[in-house]
Image (tube, rainbow, N blue to C red; front, side, top):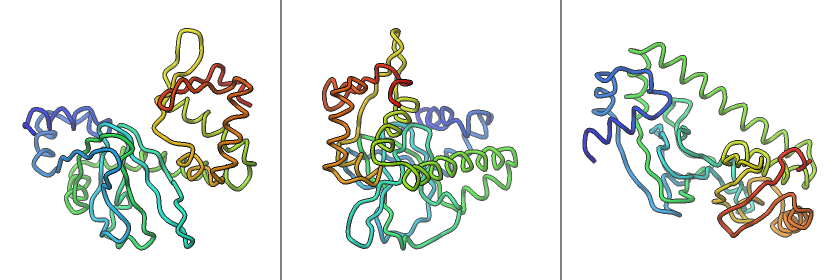
Length: 228
């Protein structure tokens, strides 16, 4: 990857967007850039988590396996999201968490030690990072609140609602067009619902014309308010 392309990758990352050209150039020296194909693992359970990753392009799921060997999807990440050792602590991946590409992806990463030095020298960046992590915690908390307090249908509806708001493109007629990277099985793992129940509820929403599958990769939400 050329220096100019590395510079562009970092410049378009929201966390670094206010840095000067020289500061971005300094980050280039410390950062590691990579790409991965769909279904490849960025890291896998048992690996040492000693890097912080910034997703530039594509979609990644963060998941782990429970004691029964079932997959639990914690997050679906998109461009500009941060993952990995977000607590900035070297740690053994004891919960068997893994990051897997849902599409072809490109990303950059820093070792924890390097990123800590960056934050020490740039307090304003440390504040922005803290805010970004706060937002991330809120998303995860809301997701698990859904699992505890909402029934299966409400969880599936909330999945489509959030997906439309964060992934969807608002159309002229007020509908949302979503590029769908997740299978019914992935949605089941994300909402902690069985595959059979997930498919049943999605089919009900399709029959009610609250969700329209154009194909496996494109979904339309005609009216976000009517989902409820």
